[in-house]
Each structure stands twice: as C-alpha cells, then as structure tokens.
Length: 131
Ligand code: HEC
Image (cartoon, rainbow, N blue to C red):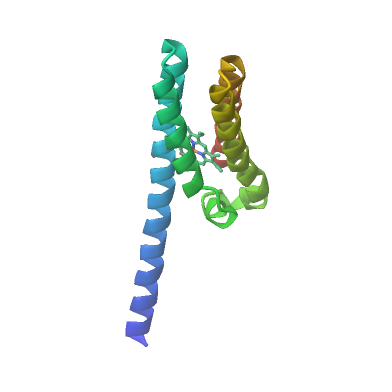
C-alpha cells in the first residue's frame, strides 16, 4: 500500500517534470527561432530566416496538444484551452505562409507572416500570464 502510493507519486512527479521539460524546450526553440527570423529579415539573410522557421516549427510542434497546453494554464483560465491551442495552430499556419512566400520571393508577405506569428505568441502568453 505504502509502496504503491510512493510509486504513484513518483510517477506523477516524473510526469510533471517531463511536461515542464516539454514546455521549456518548446519555448526556448521558438524564442531562438523568432530571433533568427527577425535577424534574417533585418539583415536580408535568407538562410537565417529558414533556420529560424525550422526552429519555430519544431518548438511549436512540441507544444500544440490541447491537453498539454491546458496543464500550463492558470486554474481560472483552463476553460480557455481552445483559444490557447488556436494560437499554436495559427503559428503552424503562419510558418507555412512564411515558407511559401520565401519560395516565391514575396518577402513582404513573408515578413507579415512573421509579425502575425509574434502576435500569436503574445495571445497565448496573455492568457497564461493574465496580462
Ligand atoms: C499555446 C500557448 C503558447 C504559445 C502559442 C506560446 N507560448 Fe511561450 N509560453 C507559454 C507558457 C505556458 C509559458 C510559461 C509561463 C510563462 O512564462 O508565463 C511560456 C513561456 C515562454 C517563454 C519564457 C520561458 C521560460 O523559460 O520562462 C518564452 C521565451 C516564450 N514563451 C516564447 C514564445 C514564443 C517565441 C512564442 C511564439 C513563437 C510562444 N512562446 C508561443 C505558452 C505559449
């Protein structure tokens, strides 16, 4: 009985630690990616933009599951899990738009997709941080 409880609580703890890792990993990758994309646009460096967009894509994929996202919302914001998950979907779409426009050399449109992505970051952070 005691051992069972101990096991259960360690499983829960490991689960919580892993979940935290996923969020941190995701946010770090997206932050690095966004910085690269911004630098790429400012310096007219296509390679940097592409590297950045890969990072954002990877990071966003890690933190796109509604159930995972919900774990990180404050108690009184859990009901907004759908809205928060929409931000992640918006980022995925923006990345596609950005990459397609880069291929077409439509750089203004690509830059707009980057701006929209930044807004999507803030939209979820606003929920999480009660801004
Ligand atoms: C679906 C929700 C969601 C989206 C979308 C989102 N984030 Fe986050 N972000 C969080 C949560 C949750 C935290 C942790 C709580 C906090 O820092 O307030 C966080 C924290 C962060 C942090 C601080 C990490 C730390 O270790 O303290 C950075 C940097 C960050 N996000 C970058 C980004 C960037 C860049 C984007 C957009 C490309 C983005 N986030 C989009 C939910 C999101």
